[in-house]
Length: 263
Image 1 (cartoon, one colour):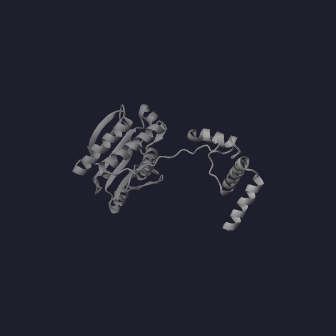
Image 2: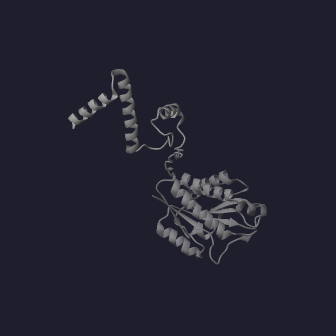
Image 3: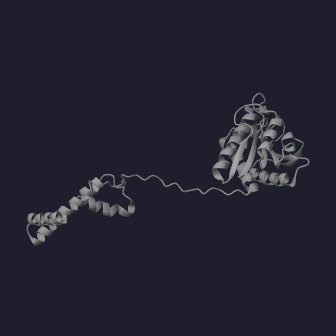
């Protein structure tokens, strides 16, 4: 079981970057919850742990302490940016990052950019607490700029948030070599009042001959309904035999005698 630690930046009394009606803490939480839901739903043998799942404040040291104690395989800290001119996406690893962190950043950055595009500000290094104090490979992502109007407008679109989430999920899955869960096709529910094309002519014939009343051709048949069809068939056979060999009453009496002898 692979453990992924997702850190939603800021929270509670710390809104993070603010601009154009957006608070960084809200975007970070939405993306983090989405990553957990989609990664666990879509891939085998992976558990996603969160620094926070609600709008609460946590000290930076508490976040990394929890991740280290949990023995997470990787850590990703989710943020939005501010003060970036034209805006865009960028990712960070520590200034003295391990090769595993470098590989994680490479894979994650590429997957995110492939999913939602925009301005690529590049893969960068910084002495951020979340990537410095984590015992596991760690990357911090800055997902667009809340104070750049074009980026802020994108962050207000569900499709863009979904793309950011999907990019993180794909990057994590690629880095950890996760196996996707089998997706079973959903069989659409049929309309029981409409006969299937392959049975339509037979259904019309059976209905015309009085074996069915013409309703619910696609519904399962009960034993009661089966008894009715059998009896209708029986009467028709008796009538046919009577027409060929004589009196129907006499045939019925013979059949009843045979049934009685068998009992």
